[in-house]
Length: 234
Image (cartoon, rainbow, N blue to C red; front, side, top):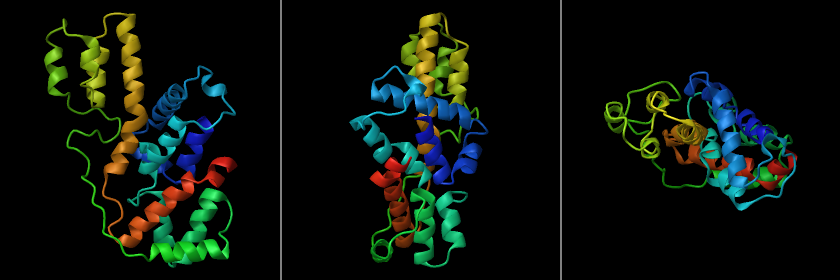
C-alpha cells in the first residue's frame, strides 16, 4: 500500500507540488492515506500487506478518490504541466506519459488512438475552485466558529466537535481539548481521515486545463494511472 501511494505520487511527478501544498508535511499525509486505505480494505495487517485481491473500496479509491484526481490535474508545478510544457507534439507527449506510467512506449495503434481522442472537441469543464475555508495544505489557519465557541465550553461532545473540524487550526485547538483516551482515539482517527484526503481534494478543486486539449490530457493521464497494466506493473 505504501508502494502504491509512492508510485502514484512519483509517477505523476507531483511530489514537489504536494510537499508545497502540505507545507513540508507530506509524510504525515502519506501515513494517513495508508491507514485509511487499510481501513477501507477491512484488514488489520497494515503495512505488511504485499498481495491482496482488488476490492471495491480499493477500485473506487483509485478511480474516484482525491489522490488520483488531485495528482492528474494540469496545474502549475504538476507532472502533467511539465510534460505539456516540454513536449511540443501530441505524439511526443503521449510517449512521455506512457514512459512515466507504464515504463514503455505506446504502440503505433495506441498513439494514433490517443491522438484522435486528444483532438476531440468538448465543452470545457469548470471547477468551483477551492472553498474559502479550504486549507491550503496543513498550515494552521483560522479556527472555525463552532470550535472557537467550544473552547469556552468544555462540556460539549468531543465527537460532535470533530465533525466540525475543517482546518489544521481546528485540529490544533481540539488537540488541547481532549479529556481522556477515548477522546484521543477519536481525534487520531478523525485527523488521519482529514489528512489523507484534504491535500488531494484541494488540488482537484483547482482550475486545471483551460482548453479541451488540456482537459483531454488530464483524462488520458488519469486513465493511464488507473489501467490494469499500471496496477499490475506496480
